[in-house]
Image (cartoon, rainbow, N blue to C red; front, side, top):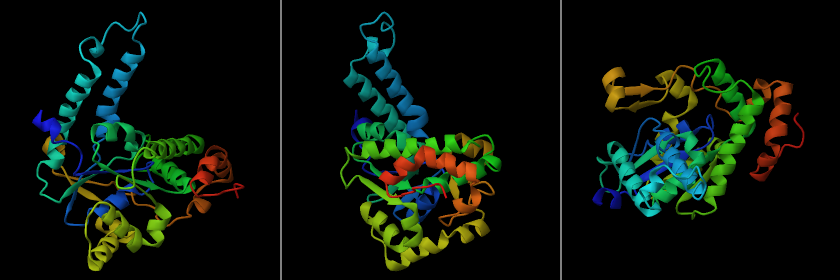
Length: 297
């Protein structure tokens, strides 16, 4: 169908990474370019598309067994099912992409999409992915602190579980990236972006095919310094739909969302026990991606 055929993802960018890796910061800096539009997290694949794909795959695996007698696989061949899912996806993307002008992009940031890159690129083969990786120790420290404050109960208070979450997001995204070209997947490190923001924000814009002057890059960086964002009340995104009807047309990050932004804060934030827990859980993956940590002190 026309809507399905036109929905290749060629005007969509997904920013992914483990929660509390700085993906909101990167999103905001990238979206400072006038050719970029953005909005709140959609959870489009993690909550809506991937569960349907996983249900389909489970049905296919059960074919030939007594349990494999029900489900949509009794009515659709795989190509037909994927075609229907693409049309559904195209309709869900309309509020984000229908107003884009030629040359403009929509940047979607949902950290959990780091575990759904294969599904994203299956259904949106021309979309682009930017994966932001942050030191596991700082991510764990931020997750634990968020769980005590603005996100109480949403995250975990256990350093081992938080470390496993980081490993899961990083490894799944990097595994999926092996099947993607350099024109579709860009990996950035939070620490590089923090230390050399001009270089790496410029790299991100170039990856997206977006031109940015030195002044535009400098203004984007200045407007998104942690101190500036705290003073202005944090990140704000326009909304529509039920959120706009029930809660107004803007969503804003909660107080305390922007915390200790400088790399290395984990040294003060984590207890000795928590450092050992992170070391035991994440050190192998950390070593693989350039965060060597021989001993937890």
